[in-house]
Length: 217
Ligand SMILES: [Fe+2]
Image (tube, rainbow, N blue to C red; front, top):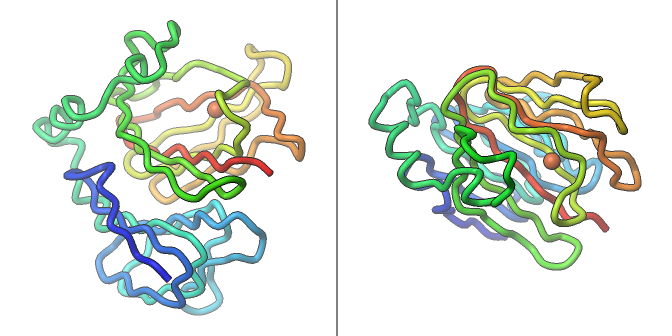
């Protein structure tokens, strides 16, 4: 059993990391992201509702149960991106996507990334961070390969965005646009061998999303 207060997105977000907790009370309207790996490791909510692994939900005044591994983004709407001072402070605190990646196609994109939070070792290793996009309708650039072999999903925290999925071998033909509102994690897009189609995050409005990278095993 453990509870860790994460500071990677401070002071903009207060985030708790929970591991092997039987129950946990969420008072204020907050976002719970279930980071468990295996089927049936559901976070249980009131009634018969639950959050499956690698999905999220907005929860308020509720005791959540059966937590294998999860983060709680407390009162996530406290971060008001319409407030220019807040938006400017995030841009000063977080590095641009280009500064982080050094990839030429990222140069000039209005994407800003918080430091990463890394959990677990070996097969259970997972990394996540928050990413702020300063403008709507800006694609991040299609890609098919990553720097490690991981299962990748994205959780929308604030604003609206989409995961654009292209054909496996054609980065000009869009296959699906998976829309995301706060509390949505798009469906997995990799196959059983970890093979990805071309894909990219695209903002719809200014917003914040959370890339989640779970090492494959
Ligand atoms: Fe990706």
